[in-house]
Image (cartoon, rainbow, N blue to C red; front, top):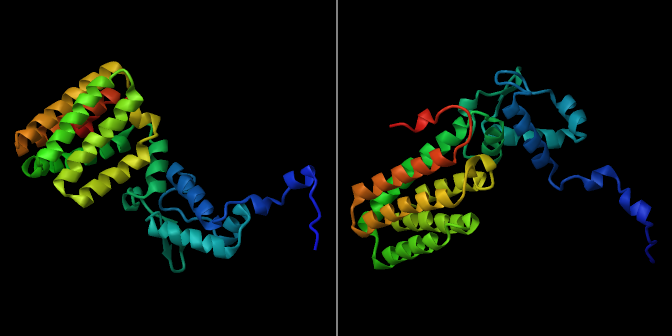
Length: 256
């Protein structure tokens, strides 16, 4: 059978359903996550019933039910027999979930969520630096020294500098052998690495000051000084964020 060629007009006017995302449940879930985080559907309130959601998103009940199931797995809703699907308080949300964390960061003008993220990263990486100082072999120490020296050469190129910065921190985490801690930090960083709020102020002065912190961490690990390495990492992450941070209020959550 010979296919009948479509005109350019016909091709550009494909049915709306054919232009939808392949996974409708995922698309509906993403939109509902944003609406819940924004407060369109406040905590303690019921999610709109299935027929309303079906009409709102032009999808079937099957798609809506799958989306609600995913929301429940993320901790954003709770299905109650006879009461419908209720939106849960933020304390129950899975903040390691990509969609939840990204939406929360977007909506949080106070930067509190990023302060918490930095405090979590700081605690984990300080502990891993402590262990790395005890376990690091000559190869790891040479790698850290090489990265610090390379970053000294890149202070006028913030984008390239930050690539080496991430490699430095990852080298320390790998040296600690803490795969869970490393996975948590890398997961958190993936969610914010392209966020202007997290990247904040950068430039030559920042890179120079930041690499002083890296050098101190390297020196303490090379000296096999666990406490010194942990303190150097803790101070470095704190000071780097305070400099980059541009938002209202003070980062009081980082004070110790």
